[in-house]
Amino acid sequence: MLTIDRYLTGRSLRAIALVAASLTSMMLLFALFDELAEGAERYGFDDALNYLWRTLPRRLDELLLYSVFIGYLVALGQLAEQGELTALRAAGTSPTRLIAALTPSLLLCLSLSFALSEYLAPKAEQAAEVAKLNAQFGGNAMQNKGGFWIRDDRLYMHIQAMSDDNGGTLWGVRQYWLDPTLRLARSLDAESATFDSTNEQWTLHNVRESQLSEQATTVKNFAQTVWTNAMTPQLLTNQAFLEPKKMSLVGLNDQINFLHQQQLQATNYQLALWSRLLKPFSYFGLALVALAIVLGPMRSTGLGPRIALGLIVGLTFKYLQDLFAPMAVVFALPAALAVALPIGAIGLSGYLVIRRYA
Image (cartoon, rainbow, N blue to C red; front, side, top):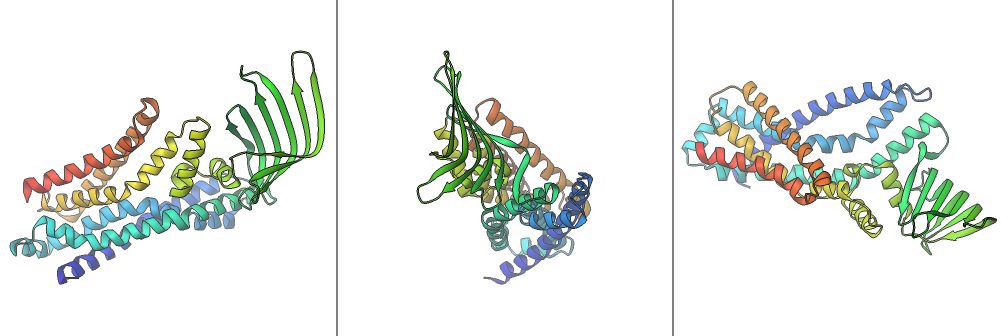
């Protein structure tokens, strides 16, 4: 690594670390107030701190992109104020060379983001939700405030609670089967269900089955019966307790495939998947904007105005993301395009400003 690369990498990483620590501290403080405001009788200060600690990897990953952006503004802005950036430009250092010098720090931050979002955050997030619900309601089951619904073709199923061992045991299982005319043909109530990972099937326990017809209703009781379904405990856990943005790439892909098999809409999961896949371009696009702000029309201003403009750019980028995501759902815009358009717009803006003033 050349001297300029080492120098800019060190300055950038120090600034990014400082910004990330500041933003994360503020987010955790506000999140703590929100947790305590829920006011659950069993949910105390220690429980809230435990929840925030477990969700820290996800929160840090969410803030890292903007920490990198503002960190670059701070690092490059300090170089500009001290005349070092001017000296580099006078020595023939092009904007392309500056971007190349920032690349090592960019890759390090991307690697950290990948480790957080794919390995640490999903498991920690699930553990956080389990611990929170157990603290609020007691017991060792993941309860979802009245249970949750799952659809599988013409089967509609309500589950009251699931165990905290990745959903391997279900309680209060109710199944409603529709016939081809979408009329209720069969219902089933089971006290519990356990998953057999060897045979990949569920065993329902203490079952009461009702067969409905125009002539009569037949009721049968079983000690246990087998239910074969593509819905694994992990898919159940993801669908019931994890938002798409909190899932790993593998979890998102599995969920999308399952929903497509059931002919259900998977747009929200596709948006989360493409956001994750195109994340490197988001980092690179905002890095271009940071360099454009320092080299462009605000090159002679102080650090404060640059950071203020950076906050406006960051909020605009977030607004564009929030604007195009619903369009993918409402107007059937491809998820990849809905994610790529804001990234392309912000990156192109940075490139054009650099080309204009550099």
